[in-house]
Image (tube, rainbow, N blue to C red):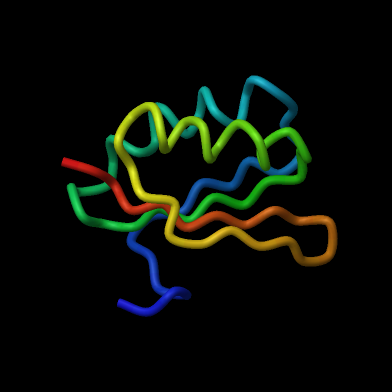
Length: 79
């Protein structure tokens, strides 16, 4: 799987803290362990919140990028 491939997507555009991480907490369960979730958000606070979410819950932040005011994350679900 390359850095651009993913299994499930979460569109959190237009949502503000804490909604993107709350939705992420539910959506990550739709991904098989080892699978990748792509998150697209517009809230700059996700640059802080999503890495912390991954760290605390044992998921791998595979990639994070910013493009045209969008914050894009690839998260590999932990076991």
